[in-house]
Image (cartoon, rainbow, N blue to C red):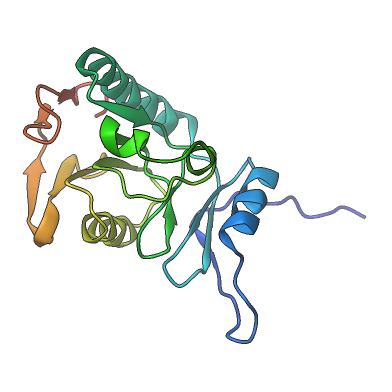
Length: 201
């Protein structure tokens, strides 16, 4: 008898915890993520779990390019540290999020203990990038960007390759939409950083 072939996740899978069952502690959630490294797992502020399959190769190649540009600037600038999409951050509201790319001021990063750095760092990055894949719902990503801003991020870019638009987020709900830009500037949060979008598109 043939068995059905498991299909990849096309939309994030949201797992709710019943009210009478305790949610995973920070330590248990970290261990759960480590045991399921093939999946990208986030936690909402309500401690529900959001499970996503790895992105397609094309999206991952574009993400690699934008991370590389951020890394090159951060290494030369020296005022902060950068992160890729596999790193998680525990936000002040209790959510654990993994932006596609992030940057944190060095003084904030160095204020963390070694133990805090080894787990999901208990802070919100100063700067985040989310790159929309073909299976990502735009509204879900927009909500996530607002959450970053509400939890302390100073700048966020949501790059929508499908519509060739970039949504720029700043604190206090200030946002801007750019149609088909070729260059993005990180000033003044990331002085001198520019992202070349020609390869991302």
